[in-house]
Every structure is written in structure tokens, then in C-alpha cells.
Amino acid sequence: MSQQLIQSIKYLIHLSEEEELFIPTLFNRVSLKKNEYFLQEGKVANQVAFVEKGLIRYVMTRDGEEMHTYFSCENEWLGNHESFLSRQPANVSIVALEPSVLLVISRENLQLMYDTLKQGDRLGRLIIESVFVESLKQVASLYAATPEERYQEFFEKFSRLQHRIPQYMIASYIGVKPQSLSRIRARIAKGN
Amino acid sequence: MSQQLIQSIKYLIHLSEEEELFIPTLFNRVSLKKNEYFLQEGKVANQVAFVEKGLIRYVMTRDGEEMHTYFSCENEWLGNHESFLSRQPANVSIVALEPSVLLVISRENLQLMYDTLKQGDRLGRLIIESVFVESLKQVASLYAATPEERYQEFFEKFSRLQHRIPQYMIASYIGVKPQSLSRIRARIAKGN
Image 1 (cartoon, rainbow over the protein chains, first blue to last red):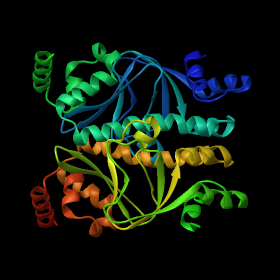
Image 2 (image 1 turned 135 degrees about the vertical axis):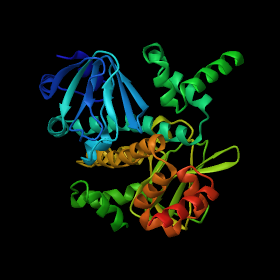
Image 3 (image 1 turned 180 degrees about the vertical axis):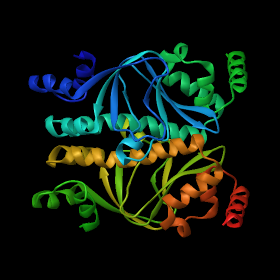
Image 4 (image 1 turned 90 degrees about the horizontal axis):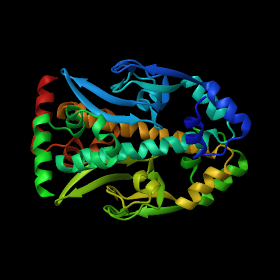
């Protein structure tokens, strides 16, 4: 099964040969069409996933308006950990932006992976540390950055993805209207 | 030394008697006066801490304006994990709002605790999971909540602390000017 997944895990912890064979048995490979849901706002997240291929958007809908809070692509972990860990309904939907292939693991199997792998809890700690840092950066940016700075941050963080994400989604990630994004782009282009 | 710390750890993992004696040797007890820094914006965070007593504020300063992004009190862990994990300069200061007593652990000793305790990595995973969930809630709220909703969230989250935090700090946490906070409070009082 997925060498990408195994490689990504081996980057963080040591795996025995038995463990390399065991891990894939815990995951299901799931294909999503464009706009198909991995998680729907209001439901409890009972699984997380590793993105083997594709691009995924995190979107909150309020008063009919869509706000994009994150994007995940190949070789990244995805999920709504807030709902997953607290078992409360999710406040965000997770939706395929491109046709995608996910390796999905249930709550029970994730716990089994933590318990069974010799360094399972270390793996969990290291994965959560890395997504936590991204979340903290976002909090700081939402408090203190100007729209221009948030646009620059978007490009640094998602530079490889910029041509795969529509402008109106980028605008909603930054927290501005699409017209404002055009003005920001024009100002930055003029400044360069 | 700190029974609070040991109790809080035993709530998450099993500790042997030897481990209960070992853990306190990894921490230093540090007293902070009001307005004394645990971490200064622009410096690298090389330690995290457990709050034994007191109240701590997280504050970012931009163009001379202070924005409060979080508050930590007794029996909670504190630190700027973004700087601690990435070894980049912190974008936030961590400052005593009341005279406080912290149990401080260095990067090296934290690693030693993860490596030495039988369930050390599990402890790390569980602590980070809990602070990560708080961070995710804050991202969602900053994107989608109105100031009224953020005020209500503040009261749910920090209800025990409301009389210990000045109004202007609450206003900056919510992301409004102090005058707006007064109007929000008046509207909510009228609604009840």
C-alpha cells in the first residue's frame, strides 16, 4: 500500500518491518470527487486522514457566506481535531477541492496505532506538534496581521498551491472580499 | 515538591513511584511579580511551564497597541509552542497578570521527560492535544464569530477568571475597542 504514508511516518519515528506491514492494515483508501465531503459541518469527526493525492479545503459557512480556514495537500495529515478529540460536532467542513485520494483512519484504529507501535505515542505527539504550530501561527496572524501581510503569508505557506486555489477562496482565507484582494494584489505588484 | 503538577500528570498517564520522585527534579520553581515576563516577544522560547499559582497573559504588541491572545491560570500549561518547537523568535510575550508561581521545564528536560517516563510521549501527546483544541477553537472563532459571540465565548472559557482580568484586556482578546465592549455588555444586559 502507500509508500508515501510509510515514508512520512519513518521521517518521524523508527518502524520495524512488522510495523511497516501492520500500519497499512489500519487505513482505508478513499477517493473523493471534486466538492465531495470528507467531513460535514455539524457532524462529529470520527476519522482523520493522510492525503496521498489531491487538494482539500476547510470551509465554514456563516449566513450563507463561505470562509476558508485552511488547505491541505499531498503528504499532509487532515482532520478537524477539535471535533475529533472533543467528540463535539465540527464547526467546519472538509471538502475536496480537486479529485483526491485519502488514506483514512478511524478513531479506534488511530488509538490502536498509538498503542501498538513501539513509538506510537511519539508519532502522535510529533504529528500534533506540527499541526499545532500551524494553528498558532494562524491565531497570531488573525490577531495582528494586516490583509497585505496575510496575503504574503498565504503565498509563503501555500506557494506550491497558489495556482490550484481559486482567488475567491484565497480572499476568504485572508479575510477580505474578492474585490479587496484584487486591490491588495495591485498594490503589491506596484510596490515590487 | 508540587503535588498539583504530579496530580495533573497522573490524570493523564500512569506514574510509577520512581517517576513521581523523578519528575520534580526536572522543573524549577520560579516566582513572577505582576508584569514580569516569562517570555519576551522576539526571543526564542526555550522553556515551557506549569502554572502552580497565579494568572498569566499572552500579549502581542503592534504599532504600540497591545492585543491579548490568551490567559493561563492555575493547573494549566503555558508556553509559546510555536517558538518552542520551531526555535524561531516568539511573536508574543507571556507576562504575569498577577503574582504567579511557575514550575518551569527546559527544552532538554522536557525531552528527557518524554524519553524517560514509560508513558512520556503519551503525556506529551495528551497535553498538546488539549492546548491544540483550544487553538483551533480560537481560529474558528476569529474567522466566524461576531464580537457578541466572542464575548460570550470569553465568558464560557474564562468564567472563573472574569473578575481577575481588566476590561481593556478582555476587549483586546475579543478584538474590539474598550468602548465597543461596553456597548456589547449593555446590549447583552438588555437582552437578558
